[in-house]
Image (cartoon, rainbow, N blue to C red; front, side, top):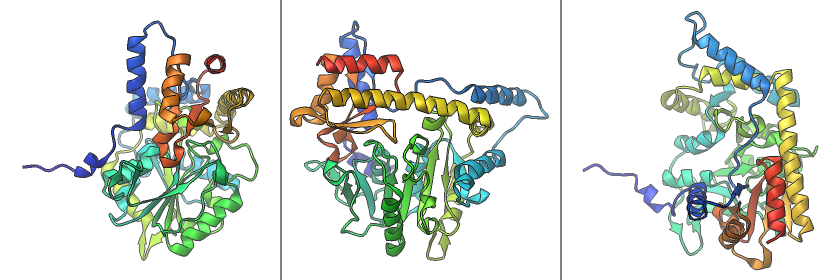
Length: 404
C-alpha cells in the first residue's frame, strides 16, 4: 500500500488566505446585495506598466517566428534578465553579485517553499512572529517543525521571535540557537522594518552561530527611509550567511504573471559544501524555468521607462497606505507600518480577538482584512490591511470602518 507524507496531516486547517477566501465567499453568497471591499490578500490591482506590456507583446511576436522562438529557459534564467538584476538591484547599491549567484524563478513564494529541500530534517528554524505563513508551513510539510501545539497555536520545534509593539517590532536574538533564520524586511504582515544596524546584528549573529538567514526582500521597492537597507548584502559579511529572495509581484505587479529570483552567494557554505551548487542542482532538476515572455517583461522593469512607471505604481499604493494609516489613527486606532511597506498593522479595539474583528468588519462594514493570529501567536490582537486596492475602494472602506 502506498504511503503519504503524514507531515501534511499535522497542518492546522487550510492555508490562511484560503480560509479567508472561503469565509468571504460564504458571506457573499448569503448577502448577494452587499458590495464587499477586500483589503485582505496582498494582490495588486493596477495594470502592468506600459513598458512591461510592450515587452510582452514583442516577446509574443518573437515566439511566432522560428528564428526568434524560445523553448526551455536556461537553468538559472536568461542572462539578459540576470544581468539587469545584478546591475540595478545590487551593483547600483554597491553590492557585487555574480551572474551565476542569481536564480530566476516563478516567484518568491515558490522559492520560500522550495528552499527547504536543500536543508537537513534536523535543522531548527527560527521565525519572526508574526510571520508570513509559507515559511512555517513549508517546513512543517517537510517534517522540520515538530508537532503542532493547538492550545498554543505554535509548533514544538520552531523558535518564535516575538515582534510586537512592546519591542518596537524588532526581534531579540533567540535564547535557543537556530540553524535557519527567516527574516522578511520590510515585514509582511506588520509593515515594519529593521534599520541597517539592527540587520547587521543578525548577520553577525548568524555568522557566529554558523546559521543561515533566509531573507525575504519582496517589498524592498517600498522602502522610503534612508537607513533601511534594500538588500541584506548591504551588511558586512552577509554573503557568508544569507540567502536573499526577491519578487516582481509587488514592485511591478507580476502577481498574475509570476516572476522572482533567489540570490545564493558562492561564499555561503555548510562545511565544504556550497549552497549555491545545491540550489543549482535542485533548480535544474525540479524547475524548467520562467517563460521567455515573462523574463522579457521582467527585463523591461529595469528599463528607464519601466523604472519610472513602476515607481508611479508604488507611489499610488503607498498613498493608499497613507490614507489607511492616517484614517485609522484619526478614528483612535493604534497603527503600525504603512511607511516602508504597503501593509498597515493595527491593534484590534478593546482586546477583541483578531478573527472576531475580521467577522465584525466583514458583516458590519463589508470590508475584508487579515486576522493577525493567522500569522502566528504574537499576531493575536492585531489585524492587517493592505494598500493594494484601488484609491476609490480604499477611501470607501475607510468611511465604512469609521461608521462601525
